[in-house]
Image (cartoon, rainbow, N blue to C red; front, top):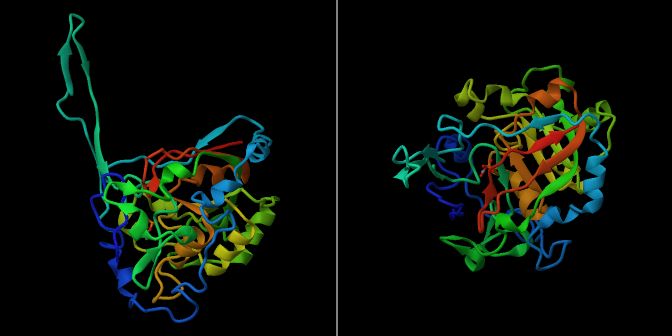
Length: 331
Ligand code: UVW
């Protein structure tokens, strides 16, 4: 498996603590279709040169639709704290230090001092993380092929991706819809391996008395986020999440992004032990739909806020595979 760079990349994807899950994969070649995930998925509906995928569904109209859902002006922070002890996938890493203390020694007659932080991390792929289109691909023949058929051999460099970098997607200000599946099942948190189905999503949508429109952001509350920083081993050791049918249900609705209070959004262990993270490939590679992971959706769910303005501007990290950040919901 090839490496995908993030800024300050220090570790390799698909290794480490979750190796148990991946050990189920037997590196099978394609079983049907032209690629290991079926028929080829390019050119994109947004054009053969497109690098933004479903972010193309963002528009002034979506901003106004989002604005129309603001009733009280209450802001919910959906981002997690970035801290050294937070759960990470495999051997990914996050470290923040303040060198020097103070970093800048007293200067001038006013004796100004200053502190600067030094962060090293797979910065787009730890904590609350926004998976971009350069994050996930499919190994086909001798190439790793990504969204819109772009080949990693042609756009990957050690200092960042020359195509599909996170800086290409732009900001999101749109309608946000919360589908509270834990609430639907009257569970604090759904168990690992629970497959969220299209029927679950539809029922939660009915409860929300909402509709999903093209360009919306759909956030899925499983309750698994309850374990974040309470029991990180449990948090990492599998999760409830959407299965392939639910992923198709979402992409049929032409959303821009799906997000969740889990580390993958999709169910782990997956439905087919020979195919790790197929929902990632369905969403990101085939449809250019973004995936926002490790959100804190507990307050939204507690307050039964099912429709809101969703705002998130990924960091403009040139050539990065993803972005950290603190998305907000405004009702
Ligand atoms: C993988 O990279 C497999 O997962 P995630 O996008 O959840 O970090």
